[in-house]
Image 1 (spheres, one colour):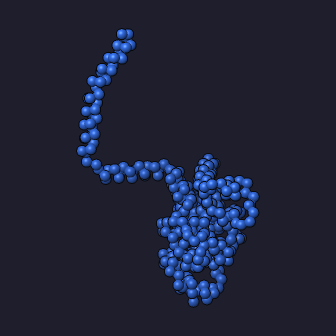
Image 2 (tube, rainbow, N blue to C red):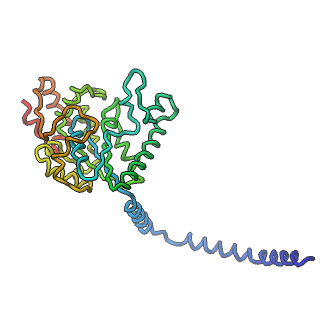
Image 3 (cartoon, rainbow, N blue to C red):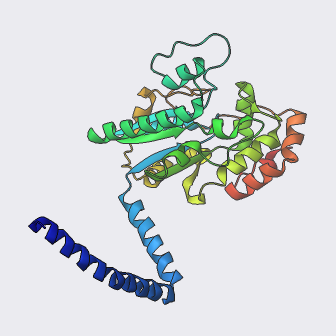
Length: 316
């Protein structure tokens, strides 16, 4: 027998002698673990601490939410005029409202819409993936230049299109695992935003009633803390004070010069306002049918009470 064979034989014998000891030790260890009391509170505390640690390490991204015809364009222009702020306006990963009908539009940089035109399978899944990658790239690019990205969510697509509506913001759900979300909601008296919606022929939901609109708006607002909501009426009556409040919510630097600079910024969604003046717009006279609909709206009463709108007191 060679030296190598002798060595291998010796090692085999040693291992065979050790295996029972290893198995016994393993068995005792498992028994000790199974007999040990499990501290659920310690486990829960550890999970909470881990979640907090992960949240602290996430980069912050800012999102503003509002319904169509609620003054969001004006507010977005004003936010865009703050130092080093860049607003990407009316974003939504899966909406098809921009496509309209008729022949395909010339959108050479829009991969998602082109994929829909080409009837690519599972286009929504592709849209979500592309959107997230694009936001991450835009965020990193803007950060590298010392800027601050604000996403203007197209909340109308989530809550005011079709017979149903989403439970929460699609954009927020898509980004929340990778970013710490700083969120701002702006709200206008539903009477005024609904009248403007009708005027622009943007009532994309069914049934097309005022109470249905308020119902959707109520569910939209349920996702947010009261302190995250800023009224449009407060902004137009006290623009500098309210803009400072919004800047604080989004953790961006306030600069009073926004009031002079905002007209030069361009964003999508100019449904009815133009000019360089921040002021309240007069409400047109209501029809008898509209007045009755407002008076009987269950959801408008809920919104009016929570956000201190007194239009019902002024409706004849």
